[in-house]
Image (cartoon, rainbow, N blue to C red; front, top):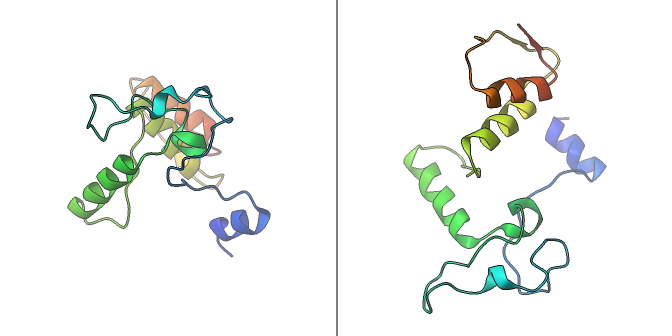
Length: 123
């Protein structure tokens, strides 16, 4: 059984959901200002209501990820808010107990933080 299967079985597998028109009580956008359109006819929202995983997903993210994955001939793609978030998310998820990481002390702080959040042994 894979780790993803174990998460699904335990009910801890999380995924992004498409936008909806429900009232959002799970973010800081309880008045709905982030859902308003910018510039009249624009398809862009005024902002995000929260993280993509909770309530801030938008169809434009998904369209951009599809273009990126096609361009790079990858199965899928994921856009992060910043390089810092990408390094933290990726490294903390991939660095398991049986992994050893050797890194230079001059690497970016986000890489050190991601390594420290993972379970790997780092040198």
